[in-house]
Image (cartoon, rainbow, N blue to C red; front, side, top):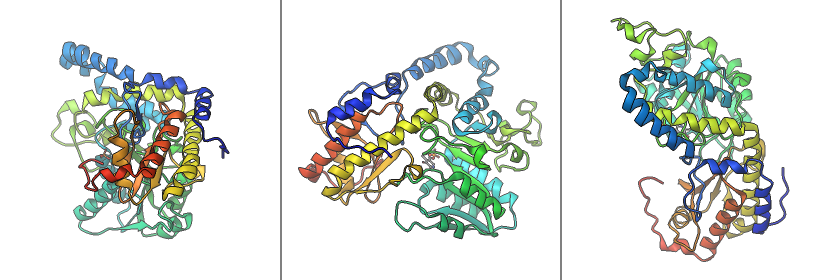
Length: 428
Ligand SMILES: *Cc1c(COP(=O)(O)O)cnc(C)c1O
């Protein structure tokens, strides 16, 4: 725990001057110095090298090589990219695949897990999970004829989940425990190893959603003994809007489990065009169809930047930044009616900070729609009252955090938010 004392902007500049990762900000396209982007946990910034990489992918690879390019490397991109992501999440190179969307991968792996535990009727998740993840479970229960039930671990304080509540939910009826490693609203982070151990003691499988933790915190899937995981690449991994997701299946489970979408790319030899399906004997059996190559290509240069920076250094900076944000918020925002909706204990916190206020939605609008000379801040809003401030340690600075919290203070003190409507936009 760092003890901050000074609230002046010069101190923020000093922290930036001491930051050994500061130069990574130059890797990103940042065209508006008046815009503070705190939404890297929803859509990461565009890396400069991605623009060149994509120009090559479009003009040279697609444009000139045409269909030959599949044999010139494209066909292996999902597994080669998986090998790179494996280094970020503590997995073996052949345990990760880049494919489809997070929701689809969750569907495939959850069905595979339930089929491997046919006598167990219970799926355990929590009240903090991303709604899509819960909808997918509800849809699976419907598809499988209502033989399963979904039990959600409650939260006593609306920010964290107590280990005792986890222990209470997992029992001998449990087939699958599926949780977000870092939850999207409060940024609460589970102890992956402890929960996985509990699940295994009861004979259940675990399926982790890493969407808010990959690229944000160090992850050790192998060390935790995790069975299955999914995650997206467009948040902290900076892969671009709608870039394909990844999935993880522990090596020894890969041939034991069977995912339900038997597309040709999951087959042992797609180009044999056999009329009967034989699944591939490795991670490829979790593929489905032709990969979306252009959006997949954009993931690679972005992952390279994270690997160069290193997850341990990124975590150290992220914790210092979220700590600093909470320190300023305690000083300036809590007296104005805000509460901190994120764990104060570092080991329980991901890389974003939720601050809550009854007028959260309108305050959020006022942040985004400010006009010069006022600074424009882009966080995002999550119902009912959370303003999420995402810290992407690759490119966010301490001075940005200072300016953003200061702007929040002004918006509330001067009641600038009163100018905005409470009516919700389509994307918040
Ligand atoms: C962002 C996110 C998703 C997104 O799912 P898509 O299918 O890629 O839209 C899923 N789960 C969690 C926990 C997320 O944070």
